[in-house]
View 1 (cartoon, rainbow, N blue to C red):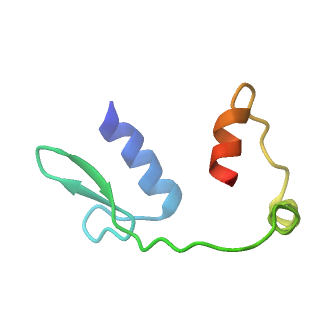
View 2 (tube, one colour; view 1 turned 30 degrees about the horizontal axis):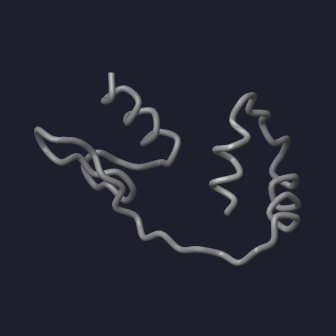
Length: 72
């Protein structure tokens, strides 16, 4: 099943198996995220405004603690 989920992630990201930019397979082991990660100092309100321009934000029920952790 993990391969199916990774394939869906690759499709959503526009990543290719033969020339990965985001997800790399470690043969016989697992997958790893290989893209460079950067951080931002944008405020929550600025993030909400930029998200609003892209469309409605999905509602996640029962994940408030996880969302708070991601924001911090």
